[in-house]
Figure 1 (cartoon, rainbow, N blue to C red):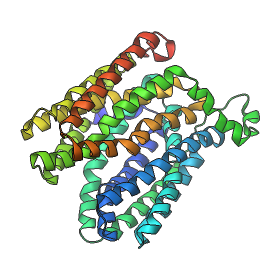
Figure 2 (figure 1 turned 45 degrees about the vertical axis):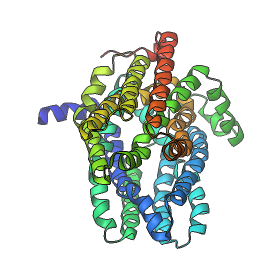
Figure 3 (figure 1 turned 180 degrees about the vertical axis):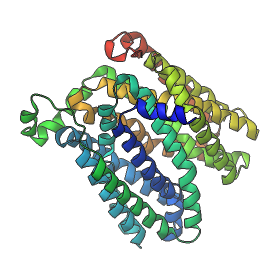
Figure 4 (figure 1 turned 180 degrees about the horizontal axis):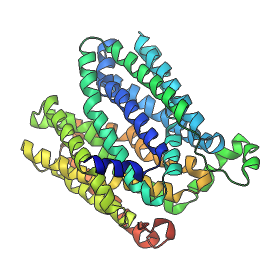
Length: 411
């Protein structure tokens, strides 16, 4: 066992393990707070989930703007500065959220925090792409998912203990965690932005010209087709973390604890099998892997509309998680391979929309179906959307699969 861990450690550069460590610590802080934030809003301001959902939507909408700006700034100023800014801002904004007493103040504050809190997102993704070469990316992104799921097991457990005593303790702990990560990152993580012979000219490039570089990204038709397919897929996948709990409670009488166990089942599956799955698929055609993973989504989410036994819901979650283990590291690797080295920040910012954009509309549309139509229809529609996305990914495989940047790198 020790030999295997030692071999794994030496397989990746030391800077990668610094990212893994800081990501793990930061994820514990985030998962310590995030699952309880809606409870905090409804309890602190005595409002319902409609108002809480509107606050969360403000974070997402303005987060898109911040992420897009962050992608351009990452390519211009580098990764390290943006990440450090994001960590320090996260600590300050988290404490601020814990102290406010007015819902009227919370809405503009959510917009401001959303604008700046996601500004470092593209920098994190770009730094990973900088550090890992093509043959390491699939396994590297897969390992980060294992770390993330470990945090999901640890963080909410601590958060539930603290929230039962004081919500303010959640905000304080998250802020402390962000400061710890910022110190580690400042001391041990150098800049990773690739240096080019034209670097001196890049430094004098105007901010407007840097931002206008998004025109190049948007004109990359193949990349944008990949993004649209991923958005369709992401709109369905996000139902697992918002609408599913309501559907299971209202349509099948499954309490939050039962839903929580389903999520734990997913996390444990990822922890046990993600790294092995990533290792086995790294030499497979990536767009074909995306298509296969999306078909697993199609089957798993559609099952919710057809079954009623709890063990079948568990089976559906496992099927979805298999698709997730195929899709998540592969999609991140593809986004990195699409991007020229000097535009990784902007490409990663647009890739970030595959999660952020669905979060602005998918929960609302799902709510309209659950509240006004046959609730099972939500999962039938989700299955159709996944089928369309799978077809799009397979079409990209036929069109782009032979290009050198998308051909799997053998050991």
